Amino acid sequence: MLFSVLRYSSRQFSTTCGVQAGEKWRKEHGLARSGTEYGPLTDLPDWSFADGRPAPPMKGQLRRRQEREALSRRIVMLNSEVDRGMEVWREKQEEAKRMEEHKKSLLLKPKGKLLMKKKSQS
View (tube, rainbow, N blue to C red):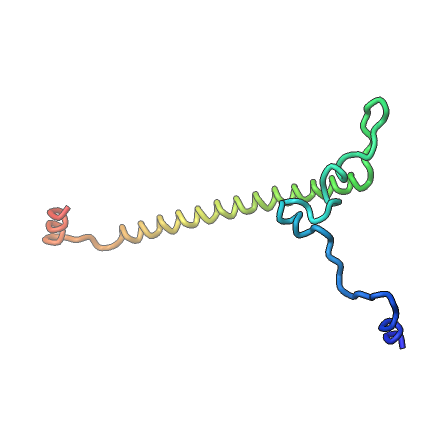
């Protein structure tokens, strides 16, 4: 019965999720998904004292500042981990190269006629 009432009502009922207007355009131009994520309207205070002193930060501004600080700390930590990993990889590559050169040095050397031929060719 409920479906029949909705079917014949003058109002349209939509079950699709709404897409924020302009989200695609903002992403293509390097901006935030919505106008309220960052920017002067969210980051700057709403008011200031008449003598020019800034207003105390609001709870949302403090929360966003803490989130950004935590994100920046995480980025620095991950970047240092990548740097350490690259250094370890380079050291392993150098060690493998040294081992290969050491193995080559242990191979039998040409003697007699082969040594004379090699010297004359070079």
